[in-house]
Amino acid sequence: MKRALAVVEASESAKELVREAGELAAGVGAELVLLHVTTNEEYEDTRTSLEGIPNLETSYTAGQALEGARQFAQDIGREVLDGDVEYEAVGRIGDERDQILDAATELDCDHVFLAGRKRSPTGKALFGDRTQSVILDFDGAVTVVTE
Image 1 (tube, rainbow, N blue to C red):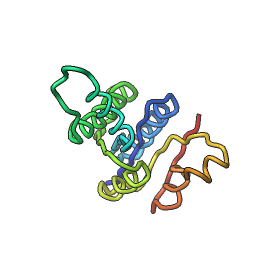
Image 2 (image 1 turned 90 degrees about the vertical axis):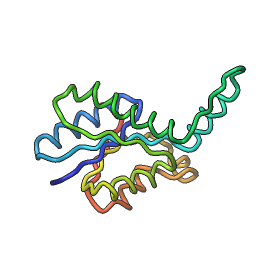
Image 3 (image 1 turned 180 degrees about the horizontal axis):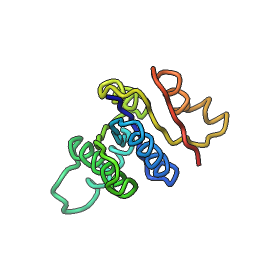
Image 4 (image 1 turned 135 degrees about the vertical axis):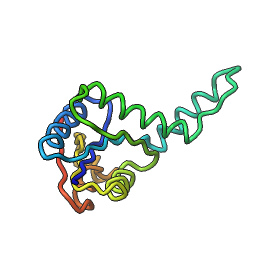
């Protein structure tokens, strides 16, 4: 059976991407995986913010960040797919490009759906372009939806 991986983010274009991925997966009988990646920076920022709250006697662990990422993907799937399409929600922590490619390989996906980000040519040169990198390095189809 075929599997499609849709990368979930907090944007309207990402929601549209999940909707389109769901329709395509349902149309061809493929399984759909929704992936949300929490970057190392996002994890550290949240951990640091929580540590700064006086009298809060809890910590923010990598396990909690993973579960939060998975839950985010689950919530977007519930909101956008409205029970019409079966999906699996997955969370990861780390470099987005690496985690997307690793998840696609580990989960045996043959199609990746990404929301593209608008960046200037200078920004792409300085910071790299996650979407371009996934397109070049993924051995399968990649569909990109831009805002």
